[in-house]
Image (cartoon, rainbow, N blue to C red):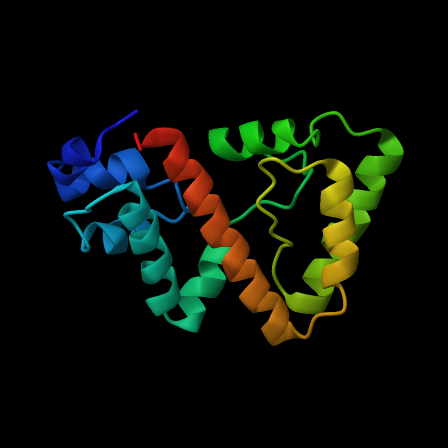
Length: 165
């Protein structure tokens, strides 16, 4: 784990190399978050990533959302996504469960135009399927807002895994 002092001492390039994958396939988020350094704490670093996302224009936010994989996909995942999805049991679905996730992912894409995002750390496959159902009634604006909140939770989990308290 890195300390805040060590993170604050990094060049922008080193910071992006170390934290560019906190936002799925979107290292530009780390560039934006780096502008808020020096961070007073790990919590301040989390807040900087969230603020950078919230200040971004809608097109950039949507690009970041669309960079996330579908849950329970068999596509190539980042190391973080693989670990997180495995922790929720998404790597050991029955064929029926896999089919249900595939159908839910497809329906979400068709309705909202982006993947269903759920910060899976600490959740089970049953929690995730329940969230699919609960969020299916959201308007596009509501779902986008919930999705951005979930992305911010992912930032938190990934930074907490890498940065000392």
